[in-house]
Image 1 (cartoon, rainbow over the protein chains, first blue to last red):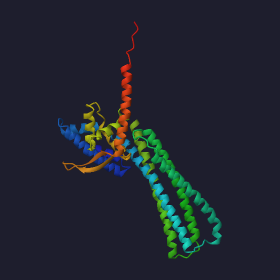
Image 2: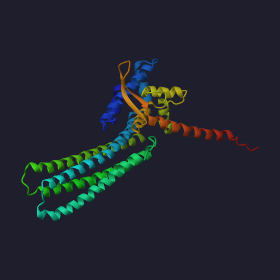
Image 3: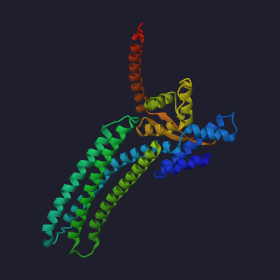
Image 4: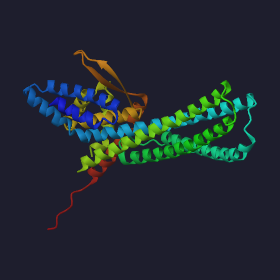
Length: 233
Length: 110
């Protein structure tokens, strides 16, 4: 009976594997304590009562899902600031490398390059402003943990700011990719080309990591909603 | 009503010292004179939530039985939060007490 209960709880939390493992171990420890304390009943009855006192597994999983989404939102708000900084360093390193090696862009690519550079700048600074605003909003606005609705709304707003910031960063990285392609177009493949290629790979990895985080938070929020809906019926 | 004060109740239970989830529930039951018999599963999400808010810290320890268990303790921020909530609760309790003491039963019409 205990195993079935723990399996149901762990399965409901499977969208967050580390939380699922931790909760399973904690709840198992709790139930074993509760059974040991219930000396008056036989083992099976003690197990039944311990599980009944603990509550419906999906209702408990719904509460944990909120915690998981909140943790993911906090981590996204911090990650996006770090990723933007890494992208900024990669961009600056590439530009410095072009200057140091006196690398020039082919003349026919310059007009297109200027337009892409303009898009790149606007997109990058948009992402900086939104990411910093999202992070500051996350840190500055302290909502008591018990106020579920206000906390959920706050997290949704932070996640939205971070998602728009990430989208702007994707536009900036695509623009960087185009600019790098313009720079490298007529250049023969040589050792010097590795620096722009490597810095571009770093930028792509950063936005990939952010996209993964956004996908995770979206999935967890959907699971949390599904669990809440299941419990409200 | 109890659910709205769950965080304060959990923080107050941990004010006596670090404890694992089951011990927190036992403390709540004992200190409230068996008045608060919460569904036990509601305590764990509250413990996780408070830990995430920085009001609790936790670590795995090995009990005498050899079982690994998660032990929770108040952080400094948790102690401050509890002190603030105690003060607010005291104020609220005094105000309600004053109101109830001053209230007179309504006279029934003859």
